[in-house]
Length: 195
Image (cartoon, rainbow, N blue to C red):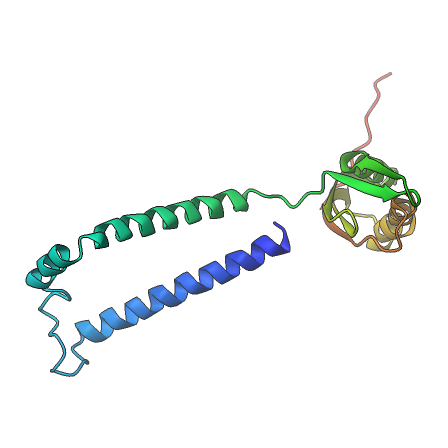
């Protein structure tokens, strides 16, 4: 999930949480009869049937407005669900070759090469890589499984000392932020050969 989607999620959840908290506090205060007696008592409905009927007769547009608000809310909820599926992955990168030329590079080609570069270390068993960010500011996310007996400094050297500098060279950029999620596994057992 990219930062924009996460920020939208936090803001939306904050608004919904505040609305639900306000409704809960109101229901609690009304239920415990902490409101002044001049207000409606807890046994009376919030809106009396006579008031509802009068409002429906004098404002027939209210049901249409309520229906429209429900449809807008449903569409907003559907959009929110669709946004949750975004991975934030970069599909391609445009490299500027000069004043009039540019080269488009597929991101999966670059990440496959980086995964192969990282996986060249004998203690690293499995690597997947993905490009995120924008074409102007790409970043890399790595997931790898390494031998648990290998020092982390060797893995960091393979990523930061070999693979990332080569990726910077290929992408012709000074900075390529990289985040690696490393899982450790037991070293593979040597195969026994029967003579």
